[in-house]
Length: 298
Length: 277
Image (cartoon, rainbow over all chains, first blue to last red; front, side, top):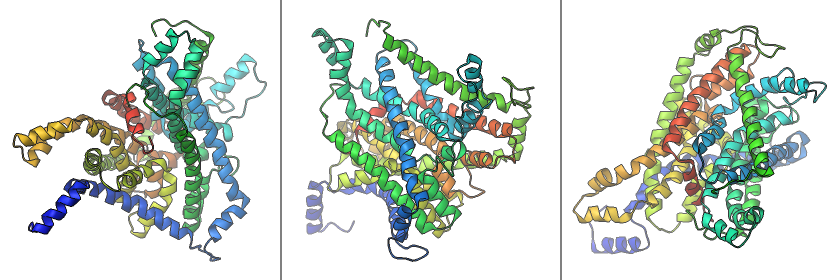
């Protein structure tokens, strides 16, 4: 700050009236970090993706991606894993959270137990699934013992193994979010509906559920981000060169195994665009819903 | 909810929970049992029991130095993200200014975009500046989701602190330093503790970014674990499992500590602060 001349003071006052004062300097460190470590690399990657290593025009990488079936199909593979996993996790957490929204004994314990899978981490989940669901694992032993199947079911090193690992790591997260949205809905609304003679299904369908849907949309988006970036489990329990070759594997492979950073960046950009498209669709749909007060907190 | 009738729906719900928990229990149990097994092939339980895999993984994987790196990375990430994130959340919570929505969006994007998407360009940039493969590079990469996360947690937290408390302190003649140190700081500590612990849990568990930027001397526990699994055949499976158990136990301790400070239902206020809400 220079010596406060008359104009300087006046300018500062005018700026302060529009909300610009020295408090905003507090934003600077965080903004610099995010701009330098997120925005700059992102833009750098974007321009790098337009400079193909093998030449062939600005869009060569993108053209190559959509021409090569082995690369193009990774989008479908990723969506085919991410969307069912996210949808399933959200759908399963709604009835559970609905049952657990009130107060009851042992609620904190049950919540903690349900949250524990977050700590398992990808590798333990993958290792555990390989052992547990493997041909000689406990799961197949039980099925064989009960006479439900004649030979071991193959659930690892294919689509199902990856889906299971996404459910184990993603469900607790979806459940926590859904539960917190549900407890934010004013319970007196439901009591009012009950007074008017609504049964439990009507109360859920016409009172609680409409208020919950916007929250579910956000929960779906966050679960989808988690499931979409599936990487380690697709390699460890999946079939990384075939059925579960997801787009992040393709990007990693291009960038760090073929050392074609340009192609790797292009695939990463495509991955971001696809993911943001899905999220934009969901959020656009969410914008058409009732989003007023739910009477509770938040 | 004073009376709960046991309808069929209730049974389905609790049945699903039970199935999920048995499934998870089976997954965890398999790993734990295998990590103590002498040999375990086509039987219900292993032939014999031993603890030598834990000792072996301790020395073979150089676990002490991996743990040290993990500790250094997470402490640095927590400290830097709190130091930068908390002031920023204060400004976001207290001021309206032109461009606030754009800035909020910039702070939210790193959380909404999968780590691999920005991790690959970020790793490329870090290689360009010769930072990839070093501890500094890993810390920088992990800051990308952590700073926005702190802002996301702290902004609603600061919003609910009454600004009149600061005004009152100023009116009583407190200089800025005293307002910050003796009025705001004590009020902020619970929120900072919660945010810090959540960032710690996330950083210890963050695989993608660390994997993309780490070198041989800057691997954290998750990445070391991943390499030991994907290089299967070199190590005994039990040894890998022993290390996975060590990892999970440390994560579990962190999560239990976190749940003591953070009420899971607080999550809703963070999420509802997203733009467009």
